[in-house]
Structure formats: C-alpha cells, structure tokens
Image (tube, rainbow, N blue to C red):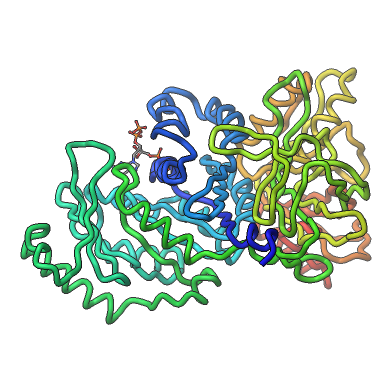
Length: 528
Ligand code: G4P
C-alpha cells in the first residue's frame, strides 16, 4: 500500500454530541490524554463554575473565541490519526452542528446516565439522522446514581428511533458501581473507586474466575447473569451494516470523570468505525483514496481579532493529499489560488501544516472569498460536492442601517455574516441592499448579528421584528410571482441567488397558497 493510502486508511474523523453537562468535554479530554495530546485533565476548557456566572450572551462570545481553537482537535492513538470535531453547545446554533456533522464520518453521543435522553440530545440526534452516519453511544456518569440500563436503552430506542446494542453492561451504579461486563470478550472490567481520585483502577476478570466472588456480591452476580441472559436472547445483534447505516447504535457504559470504560470505548469505537468515507459530487462519488486533492467548506469563523477582519475557513479534505504550497481550484469562485497559512488544531495549539490527508480538517485564512458548502479541488477538476442544505429560518426581521453614510459597511457586514452562515438574508423583489430581511433559526442569532455589526463593522442597525415563522422556496422555474394568489399576510421575497421564496405566518397559510395556486411547488430547503 502506498504512503497516501496508509495515511488515509488510519484516519478517523468524528463529532461528539451531547446535551450540555452530559460530559462531552470530560470525555474528549480523556481521549486526548490517551493520545498524549495533553498532559493533564482540566486543560481543554476552563472550570464550569465560571460558566453560570456569565450571561448566555457572554457565553456565545466565549464560544466564538474558543471554537477557533477547539472546533477540531487532531491526535494520534495506537497508530490511528484521530480528528475530533466539537459541536456548539447552545441550542440556537444547531445549524452549526449540522454543518459540523457534514464533515464527520461518525458521531459519538454522550448521555448522562441519570438523566437519559435530554432535549438537546434529541435535537442533535435528529441532525445526525439526516446524515445517516454511524452513531456510537457512551452512557456516562455510571459512578453516580443512574437509571436502570434497560430503561435507558428503551428510551433511546423509543425517543430517538434507533435500535441499540449494548457492547458492555453495567454492574450497579453510584456508590455500588462495580464495573462493566464486556459482552463480546465475556469478561468483567471491575471498577475500584479510590476516594474521589480521578483515575480508577480497572481489573479484567473472566465470568468463570473464582476471584469474581471477591469483586461482586452474590446479589450482583445473580442480577448480572440474569441481565446477560436476557440481553443475549432479546437485544439486537451487533450488525455492522445496520451500524453503518445509522439504524443501530452500539452502546457503552462508563464514567468519563473517573476514567472508567473510556479506553475500551475508544478502542472498540476506532475498530468499528471506518476510514474516511466517499462523498457525492456533481460528477458522482469521489473516492477518498483518489490521488487528487478535494475538500469542501463546512464552517467559517470570523476572526476574533478585530484589527484584522480576516476569517478562518474550515474545510474537510475529502480525497487525496494537501500540501502547503500547492495550487488549488476554488470551484464556486472559478479561481486558482494557494491556500494561505493552512493550519490544524492539535488540542490547544494551532500549527501551520505542510501536509494533510483525506479525513483531516484544515483551517485557512480567508479574505472573504469562501462560502459554506464551497468545493476546492485541483486545477482541471470542476466537480462540486453536494451542497449543505440550509435550515429553514423561523424568525425574521427587517434590517437597515441607522446612519445613511454607512451603507458600504452595512452591505459588507451583512454579506460577510451571511456568507459565514450565521444569518440568512433576503430582500423584497424591488429593493436593493439598503434594507434586507434577515432570517435566523434561533433568536439569539439576531443579537449576535447586531453585536457583530457594531463591533466588527461599526454600523448601528435598526431591526424591526416580522411576524413570519415559515419560509418556503418556490420550486417552479417559470413562475410569474405577480400572478400568485396569496393571503394578505404572506410575503414574497428573494434570496441573493435570485430564487423566490414565500414567508408565511402559519401553516394554514401555506396550505392556502398551495390550494389557490395550482401547480405551485414549495420546498423547505434551499436548492443549491
Ligand atoms: P459537557 O462538556 O457535556 O457540557 O460536560 P462536562 O464534560 O463539562 O461535564 C459536566 C459536569 O459533569 C462536570 O462537573 C464534570 O466534572 C461532570 N462529569 C463528567 N463526567 C462525569 C462522570 O463520569 N462522573 C461524574 N460523577 N461526573 C462527571 P462540573 O462540576 O460542572 O464541572 P467541574 O467543576 O468538575 O469542571
């Protein structure tokens, strides 16, 4: 096998999703410790206690800052080269999560064993399902009081609509947490709490080993034997085709904080997941092992340094190898260029890199030329990767600049923030850029937008909330919008690619429009 093939084969690129506080940071940190990418726990993120003292708003500012360094982390473990993608914690930013998942080949879902499936898990999970990627579940905090494991599995199956297959099984929980039974190796990994020390000892014992008596009481042994019998008879088999299709999730129990069950999880996970997956493009499937470089943009991060208005654009390499000074081709911009200061995040550090392979994420300085979903190839190749669908915004406002002298900055700010995918912009068919309609998925995004217009572009804006909650793209190419029969509270707007859309105040109005306009086709997604 060539070096290129070897390098790509050993890569694993995944995202971690969880409801806040389930233990995503702690688990990530343990992974990094195993990979020796960091030396001590607590270095990934500051203490949580700070977090509750600050407002939601500050938190976003912080996240914007932090995500520049922590949005992707690369480290080596047992011959694998691992890329972990971080997903934003705030629910108003689930669109960003979706984009991040576009760059991942699988996802790890962390669930708090005492809380089970929580709100944000549900939302993020839906986003995962849209991508049909394999999902691995880590049920965390078994060292605390936990729900019955059968109930947890049932909840995952019922609420998330995915089959489960426990790879290991907990013995007790909280103070009585004794360890986990590995159903495939058929041995017990026993847990010895050591007075709050964060690293616990784990011993492997076979089920038939007499020393088992000294580790778990008769009562727990009986429960375990019964549980195992029940699982072997009734639970779904570990069918890897079903896992790959995102229809079955392998489940692991453990405790990230005490470092129990984390390494077996990581090892199993790395074996069960695949190297970078092929991607669809306008010219068919692109094989990651193909020699020539290709990538797509999935995230744009405005630089925190206001003095330099440049941004960092993150791209996922989909095929071949990237080298630092190579000439690439930006398909949407129809331009050859060299990517400036390509960098990767190694835990905390940002490093300028000389080369990267399919599966890797690189960040490049961007003077404002890239948009989310753009394809980068090598000169001569003009295919486009499938676009990243935009979420239908649910909140709308009419926005204009307060000071007429600031028109230029206003247009620049609105366009750039929209390019980053933080807002979506529309206009009424007969108006220009003087006044735009801004659509967002979560209301907090309005505040971020307003704040950034002032701090980064020095423009004060006037924002007038609109009562629309639904948006539909008109799919018919040859429609005369003036002839549409619409209710008085339905509005026609256009996006900046020239597509027409309708804004509605209720679902009832959508139905009305469809009933009164024969042949009208509406879509919830933006057509690329
Ligand atoms: P998040 O990124 O998903 O939001 O969660 P994070 O890892 O920050 O963990 C949230 C809280 O849960 C932290 O406590 C963390 O120490 C704790 N935790 C994580 N994993 C486990 C576990 O396996 N067992 C137990 N008992 N606790 C766990 P905190 O008090 O909010 O923060 P800190 O002061 O410890 O940093």
